[in-house]
Image (tube, rainbow, N blue to C red):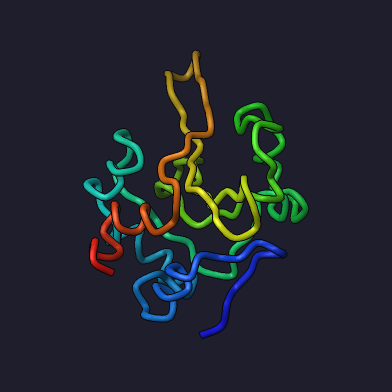
Length: 155
């Protein structure tokens, strides 16, 4: 097993193990298959947000939000994503809530380069009155993985 990094940010060991064991998607085909048959359904999504139907896990290689901007994704440069609230160079996108959600789930390295918290971009309101904020859902990736059912509590 190789320790994976995104730039100088160390990915959690459990995430690497889930990829190696084939539990976490390893290709875009496996990611896209989740749109037809989610690996993590509404029950799992409710452990992160009560408003979502599923969680779609992204395949490596993972990218920071800064990488997305550098590669031309203009979505991240507007008020809807709360530019400046978090450091985009320390935010690694690992999942979202499916097609059209525009609500990524990230590993956010707020304290150091080795122990990220899990956060997501929360949207609220109707078409005329929308608010959005970054919410921390789990103190560690291991807590997230356990809560959504990727691993058992004893793993």
